[in-house]
Length: 512
Image (cartoon, rainbow, N blue to C red; front, top):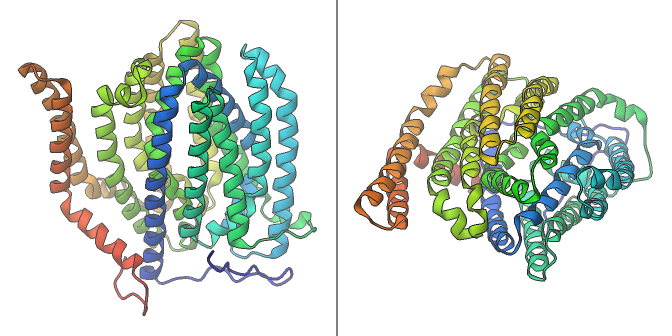
């Protein structure tokens, strides 16, 4: 049975603000949420990765080009909806039924209007990219967009209540449905539809699950005054998300005009597969930490400590995982996904390398939102966009290949990220040397992992052994080395997780 949902306050009387939990209680609550998020997404990742392997072996790079272009187009239209207003419900100290209903009808109407815009733009985009199939796929994805927007408010209420167990159970069910649709479409020979149908099915499953778990039922009422109260936050987040979309996806919008479908398919595959482990595990933690940081927005010392400890935990996952991804990409990618993807391996490795910086900056956005600094993200993404678009146009006109484009984008991202992270540090009074003190052992262990992987491959080649022996031996030895050097923080983290998940019979006594 679903968890009993928290009641939403009556229309006139505001709901009680989130209680100021003691530091140990909030810390354990956050770790429990993070554990559910990581555990749930790891299981979902295994399901989605298995489906991705099957789909990639059955599809061609040209199929990936059509599906990837359609999904990237819909990501733009999705940004144009009013999701920022729903996110404002999390940051708002007091919440009423009327506010929820007003935002529900706003986001639902925005979804319908944007879907109509998709229907009008679909034939134009299909002609521009010279991909007739793009028109039909966009129309179906527009339906998925409307479904997703209808489920936005109940999903936001789950996040506000920090019901991460419920959120991840819904996401797991959606992942199973998405994987099943993708594999079935690929197996039956429907080509690029194996990338389109999972998106629609996932949106439907998440929306239905959120309504069921929250028991939220919108009433036929709407008041502009409620929207105006959160308009500054919502519009700032909309602008930031719009700029971030173009800075993140300008390569998907520009390069298909210069590349063949097969070349763009290799590029899309490399980018999506390289960031999949990060997005399906660590990236989901922003959902956990935004409401948690919002509760600490008036206590900067606790916020600094929470941010620093959480970032160290994230890097403990990200750094070793992506060293293995880079070191094992060849021969693992062709072996898993098929030989047709071997040209994508160098770009895959470059995109995976950026995740080291992403690990350091994962919590910057939720922290800035929590302290009401949403416009800062807009300016930093605009800076990255100004660098990225001209570079891509030059690369496209000069005939640059997939690896060159990936290398240039990696350089741009690495240039922008320290400024973005540093801005948050100044806002909350955190210093880089504090981060370094917490990450020194992890950086050493990760560097040794990389050296062992390189050395094992070189040793296997020098001895005339098969490549897989060096890869397997180096991978195992590097993991054992990492676990040995980081044993203490891993054990501390495991102990804290056990305390967070243990049924509480009395208030926790230890500090987070």
